[in-house]
Length: 203
View 1 (cartoon, rainbow, N blue to C red):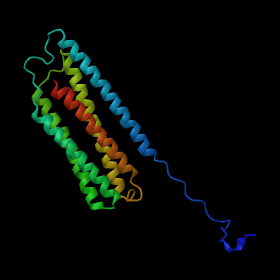
View 2 (view 1 turned 45 degrees about the vertical axis):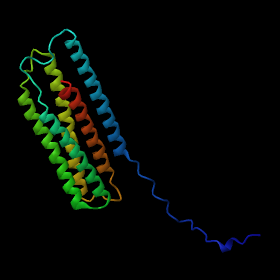
View 3 (view 1 turned 45 degrees about the horizontal axis):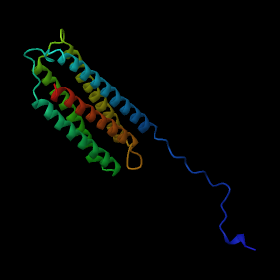
View 4 (view 1 turned 180 degrees about the vertical axis):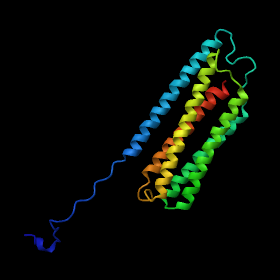
């Protein structure tokens, strides 16, 4: 017969372990990111459909005298790639409790985002596309506007998570908010890549 007195008994007043916190913010952000991509792909499909319909009538898609230069769109693509690298750096820094580098990376990400918005505004002045009397104008301005709105929302998300990190809310133990902001920022970069190819490259 086994002598159970040799084994350590567990006291009855041992507290229960803390349940794992559900990653609600990350899940919600992922759903919003997926909806953003699906919605923008649908908008791009409609743009391509309308464009093909106009080109099928032997009519020019862009009005006479309107051109879309490639210098600004290509630089904006490079800017967005750099912003993705900076955002990944911010996430890595927070995961390693490297707060100084995290704030530098947050600032760089926001700077690249602002640069992309400024370059887009300059590109629109170069295009000089009349907003009325042409089906291309409404669709191009809609696609560009949605992408700018996505960038603005992503920048706001980054600002909120940077302030939360500054206040000590996120660290190596819990960085869900920064990870969520990174997911949405990468989604924003993907949206620009779609815009870059569908509008600026194929024109």
